[in-house]
Length: 424
Image 1 (cartoon, rainbow, N blue to C red):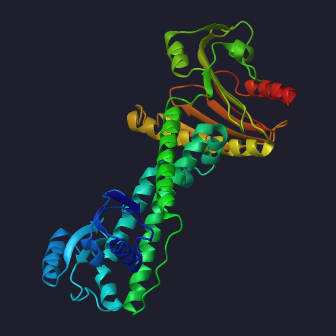
Image 2: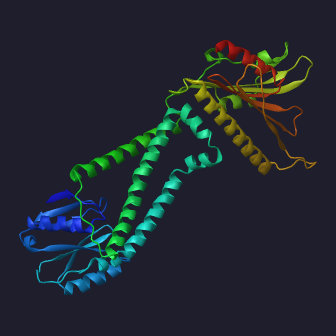
Image 3: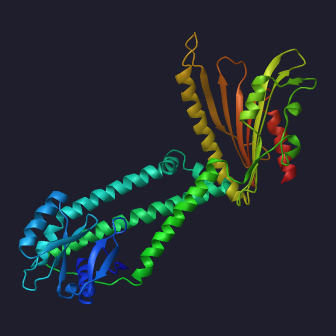
């Protein structure tokens, strides 16, 4: 048994027929084409094959029509041998006096009409598949285009994953479209009475196996990166306590009035467990801290408040990268706030006086001394007596997201800016 890769393109009918007839003249008859890889065929030695000829015919609607044609062609001296996917039926004739299946290129061109239609449907299906596979990526590009480059800067695994995923999709989609276009061109030339010259592929015995191996390797690497990304990646670790906060930051005790007592209840403890402080890094952003603090504060005047302070601090390789991260964080936070508002209104649409239970106040782009860029998000729950704020800012190559609940909203910002200025 001899296994060979097809040395001609799938749309090169004349070339495939020539190849089969050349092998037949050498004493090898076709046994079958691979069901998975159309470009691979098996041959076996046969003295009878030296006097036969092979012809290809485009497959019509399906197996029923294929059987009917095979029966008609058998009467003319041609017997069905194999089919190449859903593209061609391969016929063999041992009688040198038997007539040809097609006597002119126009007839062959018209016979390809159904094949072309099926190819375009396959191309459309592949395009839909690619859109579904890349739906998250495409969704980001449409709804929050600045978030994607930010994530690529911050996460090495995600950047490689998107790159490999795109490569896998492109390597699969482009050949389908290329084959469809080439089939359409071939049919158009045949209908016009022109038979295009055949062209043998260079290193066909190596090119197909190598392309399959490369595709398999891409898929394996993409799966590994997907797994690493889903479990958090190897570049993220938890921070046990504030002693590991090696970056400009502020603490709850610093921003509350002197004499304030802090107490961590079960609610705050659960919040900190579900939102642990972490450190991450990437090639473009070597410092990425995400910290959370929460407590019940008893102020000197006897008032009790729930206080929370969340801080994300990012140090990038350059101010240009930091600007990308800043823009992405603003867009990401705006998107999260919108989703939060919608979810809140669905679960708790109104309180007794028909006031919205969640009120998104405003987004302000501010000019702040000591900062290159600053955006403030202000919002408040209707059952609370004080607003909340989230600041997204940039100073040089440093970016921060400061979310505050409880104390004077500008005190932690001023402290953080003072320390960021000293660190830069």
